[in-house]
Length: 153
Image (cartoon, rainbow, N blue to C red; front, side, top):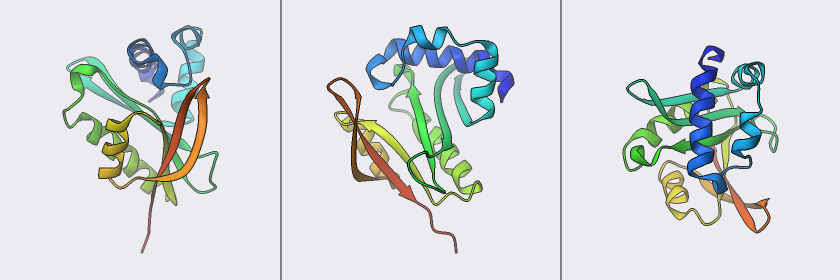
């Protein structure tokens, strides 16, 4: 999906503008990325966009998990406030779960802000459990790791 780089950039800038504390990046940093940077980002991972007509309003990305061999990690999950409370998040996450399974990943993990109770409950409902791991994302802002294991018969 490298050809969708402009839409991916657009929704990422929206996400960082709307919810800057939820991500380990900034609008300024992302705006400095070139077309080549965006295309590489989309080639090296699996990014899903959610749409409202022709406007991107949601995103989630799957990538190789640097914390656990054989696993995949979901990052950059965001929905425009107008899409929250719909089934858009479930559809996005399902696509990333399906991708991880196709990749034969042992698990899919994610990091979520420690105080984001709504997101943690959502992930728990679809099979993710907290691992007990915690990292400081920004000074005084912590994330917890959640994971969903896969069993292949």
